[in-house]
Image (tube, rainbow, N blue to C red; front, side):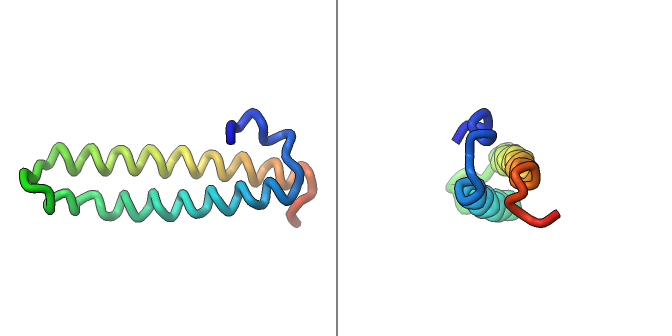
Length: 82
């Protein structure tokens, strides 16, 4: 869902988006920590490992920002304590 629509979401929808973002963070974190496993590819390459690591890092950063925005909307709408 585009971030521009976050303001239109009600609390249960925000909760669902937060859960999805948390799962995405877990996947990106796992991908980042396992980037070195590119050695299983027939022609291992440090540049391939670096690309995998960079892509996972970018995805992790983007998802963390998305989660922060969702949590901010939850607070503004009093969906969560805090």
